[in-house]
Image 1 (cartoon, one colour):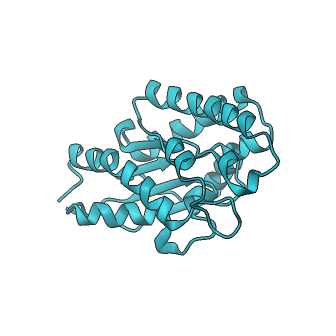
Image 2: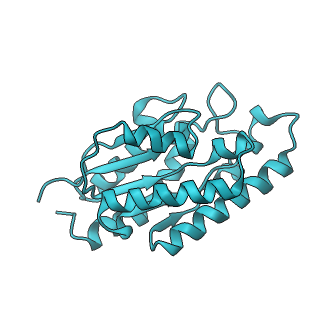
Length: 203
């Protein structure tokens, strides 16, 4: 059986702003899957620092995508919150992205939605209202979790880890280090592994 394909959709957290390519969590996730004897191709990453939900959607429109992917991950929304965009808009646009992700995977169980980390705990947020940021991040994550569950997609929460390891950032004082991304990959691994094995993608 050929190796499974993997599409990772997101923003700076998915492209790994400030870390080497092998430090990105999608790349680290593939390494863990391969170590578990699950054959997966290198991730196709559609993500750019600063993207909001609508900007990710526009990028997908402009990209040649080849379903069906063995695994699709979606982590988006921090820039919606950062720019003060509404939660209602986020729900609408996230749902559209989730529907596209499911169509690209061919099965909702192949889609893993990952929570938004809390940038308010990082050195970058010094002088800002950290409690307000946390409250808004939690609200956006509640929407993402709700829509993932409604769609029967998989959900992984990395927000708690981002708060626990607030100092694990790169030189910009904002984005996670490769070491922190390793924790995310560990958290995502069980859902990704189950998705691929249950759906007979593994060799």
